[in-house]
Length: 395
Image (cartoon, rainbow, N blue to C red; front, top):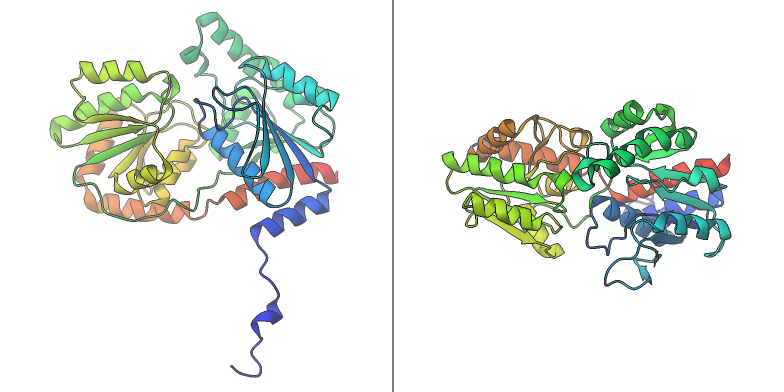
């Protein structure tokens, strides 16, 4: 080593993402953050929203912040627990969680807070009315088309009116965080919340997702998500039935659980698809990683998304995507670069079939998908979402 070369210790200890988060919080005077969410990651219906909230909360806790997440009761889970360093309180049913969480916060039953996060997942907590101090609302996407899929007509209409007309005026001066530029535009268009109040912070991807192994010997399409109407798995099963007319070895694996399972089983039976449509249910992290790596492509026929986290998880494994052209997907998939976006069920079948046939295109798109996914980290997501609260605190 030259006498002019610095010794390793001259550079001091490396600054970690947790250090940066901690410094940001300290400068803003934020120590305790409360998060209000409809559901917890332990809930049987947990999905991308819950994974997002849990991942950010864990990063904040790792940086030394005290994080309390308040959610509804989750079947089979204790009313209070600690996960990845942050506290979880599960009290109240699917609907009572909203007034109970608000009254608990107003009464200070869980102690003081330096900042508040409200996750607006269809039904809001109306925090701008009762909460004081720094706060932010996480709004992943507009639910307008989802209400009729999950509720009777009158209740669905009430939900649409609440989301589009009643609640937005209370949030027009509140900081909003959403996942994608396309979701931001949709929120501005449908809910009339000023664009300058909305910050886009894409979700991260776990470091565990990476390329490896070989493609499945059979043309395999993977779909991952909750089995609920908005995901439109029936359209995907029917599209694969069309694909198999040209490629009889093609098969579909669906990972996830939900109340649509019986319907999907019936559709599979009606199409005589039990041999090639594998409704796998919930799987462990290692099996999911293996499926992402071995699938020829990942597909989504979803009708509403804030992003499309399963698509970018697959991208990190160098697996391209075919997905519907909707807000969220438009940002998670770069059309004709990391995958293909489609506008109809016919296009869905054609795109899947075309990509299954073209190995070189899949490989090129998979490499581009991996490169794109490398920019998406939970450290960055946690920092940028905390910055929204910090800016409120500083003001």
